[in-house]
Length: 69
Image 1 (tube, rainbow, N blue to C red):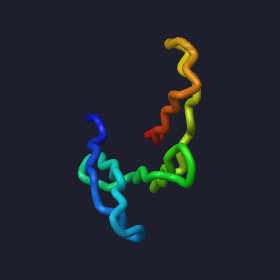
Image 2 (cartoon, rainbow, N blue to C red; image 1 turned 60 degrees about the vertical axis):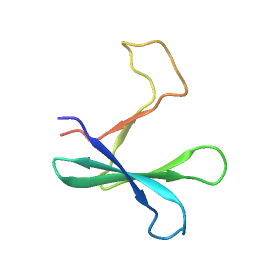
Image 3 (tube, one colour; image 1 turned 120 degrees about the horizontal axis):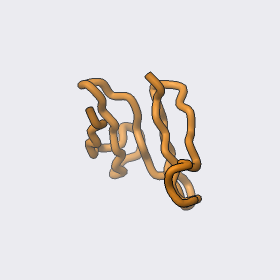
């Protein structure tokens, strides 16, 4: 089952939006804008970050963050 993305209002910053990541009906992560270019990912779990997938061409703009079950 894939994770579901939902857009929501930021609980602290008025007028800002965040993305919530839901999996099996449970909120597992939020993604919000960060100061400067980029995003802030806040996960419920300690996550391993995969910067490079050996099966795909090297792309420094792609980072996969997932929780290992």
